[in-house]
Each structure stands twice: as C-alpha cells, then as structure tokens.
Image (tube, rainbow, N blue to C red; front, side):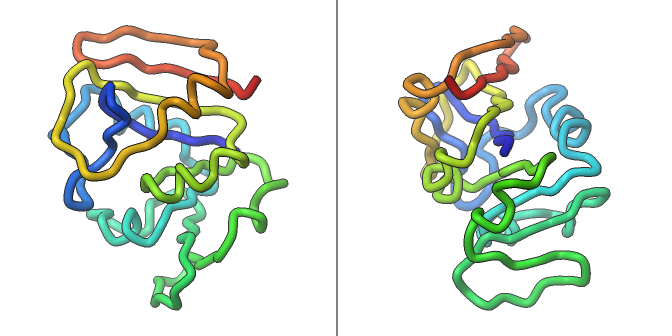
Length: 151
C-alpha cells in the first residue's frame, strides 16, 4: 500500500480539519498524477474536508466505524484488511488513519515543508525514520518531495 501525505518538519498535517498551509507549489498536481486511476483510502474527517467529492478518476474508500451516507461509487470500509492485497492503493489521510496504518504501508510519497505550521494533527515521523529508507529526494524552494520504501 502507498501513503501520500504532506507535512511540516514536526509531522503536522492539519489544523481544524484543513491543510495548515495555503498552497505548496506543485503538490496537488503531483498528488493527482500519482493517485489517478487508483484507489484512495481516507478517514471520515478527511472525506468531510474534501472541497469536491468524490475524488475524480479514482475509486474512493472511506475508512470509518460509523455508518455514513456516501455518494454512488464511494465505499465505506471498517478495516484496511479489505484492501491489503490490492495494488495501486493510496492512503491519503488523516493523521489517525495514517498513524494506525503504518503496518500496511510499503511506500511513502512525502511532501515536507521547510516551514513549521500551527497544527492539531500529526503523523509519527519517528515511524518513518525507524522503518523506511529514503530512496528519492527533490529539493524545492519551500519543500521537498521524498519517496521512502519499507526496509
């Protein structure tokens, strides 16, 4: 399973169920290019925060223990077990889903800002450093794109 996420240097990924930064140059086109025609999996809060839903040209799954109403072609699941042997699956957040799902993630596509932001949701960057190897890094003016592979 793939994880695609953007964070600040402290692992901050969100504030009040929104991204804490206005825009990271090239990040959304990169997200779209990598996840298009794949399966995206997100928690309920991430689903609710999407400005347009479902994400187009992707099969959308919402990981939740609650019963929620979803549009046609979007599915609710209670566990990542249902998708663990399927290729082209992209975990897209939020923090709780990511922090509970490290065991499923083989490849991480990380956008990391240089600036620190006010956040109330964080991913565990120690898990990244302890279990993955950096295989690609592209340095930009205000962020890096990184690819990490499970050791």
